[in-house]
Image (cartoon, rainbow, N blue to C red):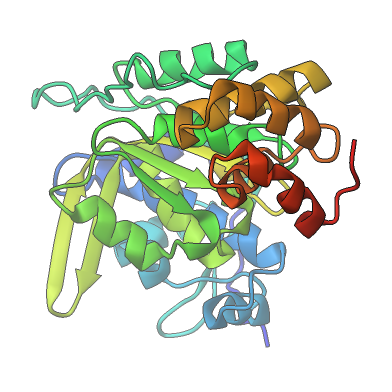
Length: 345
């Protein structure tokens, strides 16, 4: 049952200036726009709840309440949320400990994007990623994408990139190359939780680059944590026996087979680049180069395996499996082809 809501102020009552004044009035302890992060988290929570969640109890709770949320869910001050409700920006339930809901999500998202962020502190520039010069060695094609990734990782402040495309287009190869940055961490989206992400980023050894493959498989309830980190680098823990708050700029490079299910707020933090499928010649060349560079296969054997494999599958990993099955010995290839059920020729 949805909470009973108090009457909401007229939709035209508030302006961008009204919202910005409230954002300036409730900064975090380190001066970061904490209320802005809370509102972005609220938008993400509502978007993922409306999209159906991922089966977690928390997502089911949000759906049951019609995408309402509590102060603790977005780590905001109660006084700040009350002011937002008084201005008509939020809808507030009539409970003693009220639930909240954004009145006009699209309008609020535009106003938050337009908010003039405070100048950077004098703490000095963030740690910069150091992409090795030979990071993309053995990866043919996608030259423009490689150039984009180098530019993004070389930016003075974080620029996030999302590579989108079906399997076997080279996304994982590119992401693995980015993960060669010293201190970079590589994770599959389906294995990432908000608690794990938070603890990783709070760790002193955490590097400036987070690589997330299969972002579309990351649990919807865990995405708001990523949203906050991408927006400002702000990582917080507020528990009865643990309170931490750090700002750690992080460059996020991710891959996804599809953007379906990803919230508009999350997608807006990325530059999205669609990865086109390899041509037949490119695919054969990529397979051979991967086998030589990463598996240590003799170039002639690598070319023979690639020539056979690329005609049957666009999956570079299949060529790797064939090379491992034959132990780098060309004489064992016929037995491998038979074992795989591939006809001669």
